Length: 178
Image (cartoon, rainbow, N blue to C red; front, side):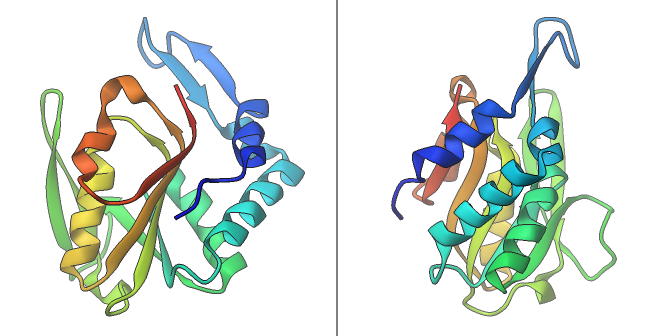
């Protein structure tokens, strides 16, 4: 897929708040709530993403939890369905699950397989790609449910954590990278 228009990355950067030492000392948290609170910027972002993916996807998957905030209006704007990929125990069954590694242990993402249309081209959306664990788990779940991940798209990529390497050959794009 083609690269995002530069203006979309500018919207993220212009509406991003950096919070040092959150949630722990030494961490620089990049907060997208100012972008979400700026109605015209948020509308422009969603419209730009919809225009970018028009005709290329059949559904949008949002990753818990900020991915939901992006995926739902994008799906509505595009007139396609939205599926929620959630942390373990948050969806009523039947669900399928995929474990992924954390620094000290594992976590699990789940999906209702009946929410994935057969052979659908699915766009996976989240706010950030860090280690790549949740995005990769979502990719596996969608494919196991009969869909095809057309692309994984995030607002921000934290390149130092090398999460992109977990995605294999799945197309991936970030609006901005740090």
